[in-house]
Length: 444
Ligand code: GDP
Image 1: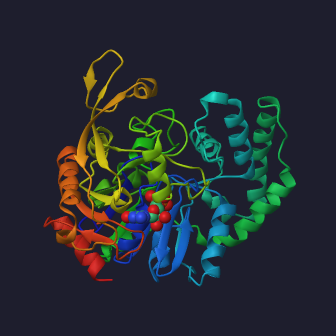
Image 2: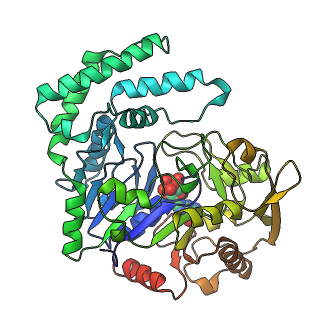
Image 3: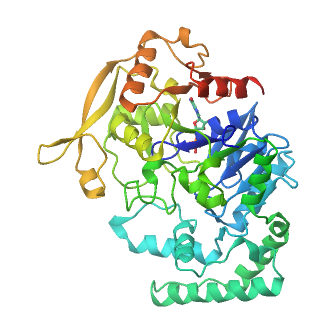
């Protein structure tokens, strides 16, 4: 599998357009794996005239026959997963026997959602900007070793009831005593969970052995990361980060496989930058250019509908992401959204309040908040890049922008996306990885 597997991760603050890139490539794989996060992720995939919003199910589900795995490092909201499966089925996608859920994945129960809302409500101005889906509290229970895990969905119903009730009673105690808020109706929550278990129980299965079987059969596997490196629990802008690791190595831990089975890493990055919720974002544009990018790029959250903060491409943050996660090549998306701007800026270093210049991302979010990005300015292009599928037909300034970013970020840009549709994509360069990508996209 090592030769044939591939990993796609977000190289910025999430929402980089991973959904399109994964979807573009997933037809070339026998299996697609999600290994981190939960239904706080939102991937938008367009297929012909259809539009799918996926939160938990790997994007490979759109392609007939591709197996979709949910690893142990994920947190799974049973209600959310069933809703997503129902939606896919109502759209005519055959999902039967194609989704495999790790018995070791952490389950989100209704009381987790209530805890999430209660805790975020208490934070006042220090809000982390969670999606309120219970992700953080579920990961917290995992670390606290009291979580419910996927296998309970396949256990005897009495066992599920006993374990779930015990956990949710603890949650209700915390809601009432710690947060002074209303407890959750446990009977209603239990009924919901029992109903979901009937649907999901048969899908529970170990992921690692299945992936090893794919490998032994010479079948290629695609690993699909959620969120982005700068939202990683350790390497992101802590504490304004997600509750799981977004780095490639976590896929091995999540699936119970050797890291040798993971393939080259493609980091998806936008031609500019966006961020949802609070936290450091050095290149944020609080002006007409920023709102112009937001409108043209439809930068509103897939999961929450929240407007995204928009800004220039941050080459310091991008190179940091490349270094800490071992990105081999970049897939640059939404180049077309920069069509029509007057000039383009790229942050190449930061200035600290002391006057010192740094060229890496600091560990402390407070330090990061105070950074002043130092920009280099590049000429914009007059002719549109939208929908151009041949590199030679790109305006020369757009091509210069790609070369410039490659130099600053330190790895090749192997894929350029300049429109939401599959066709609006080009694979660049003559590296072995680019040839392989061309082969996958061309073979579909
Ligand atoms: P993800 O979570 O990383 O998949 O990001 P989103 O769900 O926010 O997806 C990005 C959005 O941008 C989706 O609506 C895509 O259809 C769209 N998109 C992806 N690539 C491009 C592109 O190159 N140009 C344009 N205009 N839209 C794109």
